[in-house]
Length: 153
Image (cartoon, rainbow, N blue to C red; front, side):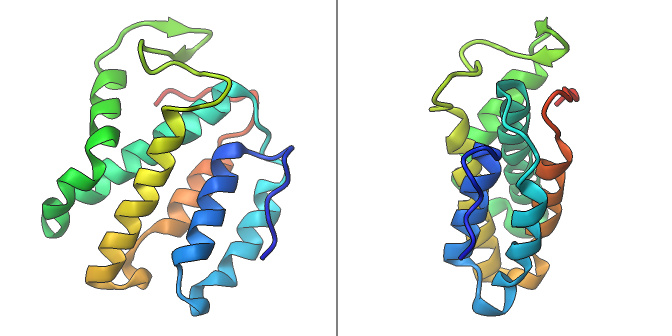
């Protein structure tokens, strides 16, 4: 397995490593291209927060689909984060930073959103197969968030 380097995104690195553990062998080769693309995504705190939030939103989107509503409990933290962020009007430097969901050095809260998305993906794949789980779109979305860019959630 080719790991994402420390200078790359912490969030993307964890998602890629997690996917490597759960994807079937036939899908794992796709991770190599994402690893290359992620190597220069950058890791500034604002971008990392945006990536973690995108994972939370993705998990919420997955469990909102009628076929997967039974997984709502699997994305409880992500759904709460999305509700808090979208309901907050406070902005700092063009980035939503609601309390208590703030950017921290360790990303203790935010990394749970990444793992929750991974867990939801795994549960959905168990029901419908990995080919129907849009995990590649999620990785592409995370890579598209470049250091220094601060799109709104």
